[in-house]
Length: 97
Image (cartoon, rainbow, N blue to C red; front, side, top):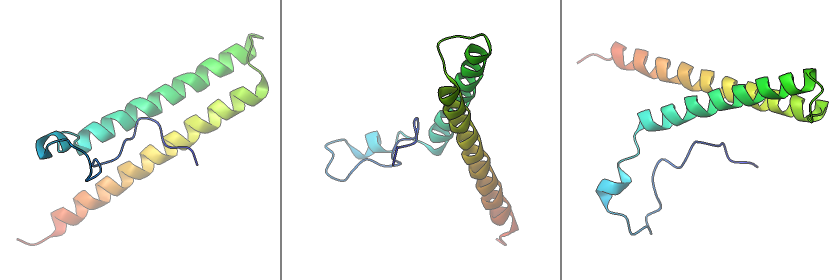
């Protein structure tokens, strides 16, 4: 199974020699930013593949379809993460203090 590009582990392994402050530098915002950038890059790659296919470039139909599917999956994943983040925010707002 291929790893999602641009999304790294949330924490480093315990056997790492990095200090605790070094491990905490990767924030949720950084991960979301990387995910959005990756999604945007996938969309641009799909657009380029379609343009090259349409213009008779070196790309073939299979490569263009694969690029489009990668972009679609990346976008669906980003939407689901957004939905879960909104659900979590709404749940926190419903909590009584």
